[in-house]
Length: 317
Image 1 (cartoon, rainbow, N blue to C red):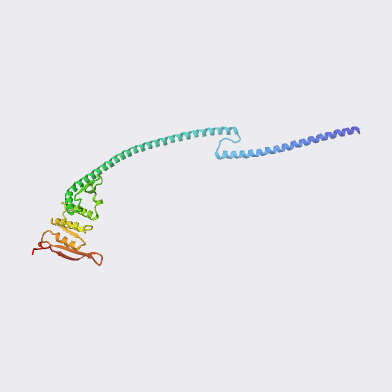
Image 2: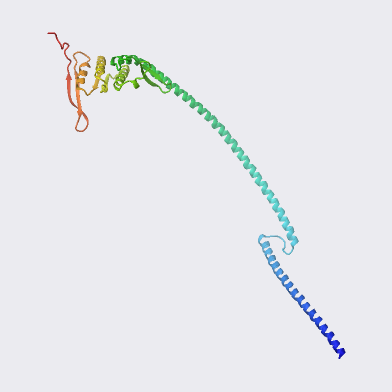
């Protein structure tokens, strides 16, 4: 019994060790199965990648087999070298085209510079022509002003004589002319010690001086064949004394066989003008009275003749 007990104890220990070995082997088997599962997953992934590689080979027409990595690597290196050569060639082509564009730009710039030089020469010649034209215009204007001054010198003696007869001012009985400006001429009259009558004379005095100027211009035109003088109310702003002076001046002009037509408002002055403006002693004058018609137009209301007065109106008893 004792020996059997010992054997049973030994068998129990052996069984426990065997159980432990079995448990250890089970753990190793589980680990191996997990590792195998990982390997199978990796294999599936590699097969999918290999299928993709084959598809890319087929799509792009690569030479070689995907199962030979070394051949694939060599082909890849060859393609890379070809790509490098193509990039270099492309760079050379771009450089050559850039050079051609630069040359074209330089040629265009040279052409534009030549055009600019030509246009600058044209502009310079045009400016010279404009300056010459301006000088010619100024010279022509100056000559015209000189001619006008010379022509007015022929009018000035008659103007002075008429100014003395009309007598716009009792103190300043002499009048002079002053031409100013070379480009744009201006005519000014001077009385006394360089005074301008435009700023000193009254309206009536200015009217009398203006009549002297206009009558002088009218009488100093030998080239004009029109022997008529028309005056529209020349006695405005003129007193009776200067109006009589004007009548005497017009009478002197009438004796040169010129026709004189004067429009006035005063009937007595109209009769005086008709009696005085006669070319001969026995001539008659004519008065036309004008009024406004119903339509608003001017028309002749009446016409009458004015006969000269007898030479001896007052006789001794």
